[in-house]
Length: 121
Image (cartoon, rainbow, N blue to C red):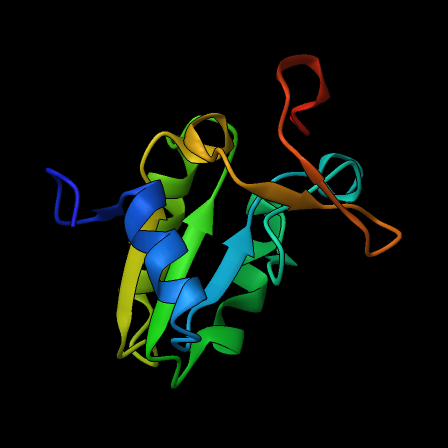
């Protein structure tokens, strides 16, 4: 875990993904931003629609929320945690996509390395 109980470090998330652990990655950016690139295997649930789609997280063991810098995703953690059907662990990616140094999945399903101006946010 990172220094905060409601965050997970990029390295910890990468370790979970490499180990094929069950983790639901929820990218809360706009659909347009998500289409420019996202963490492989993540799904897009824009922040503004999160309260209406909260039931999607019922029964998930582990949810990681993602945004550009890790601020809005902390709010998303609180929203999901407040839902009584959410019984698993919910964490925000510490530092957001800015801190994610691995590959991004593009709209066409291809992956590319993160490089400065190519960052998808």
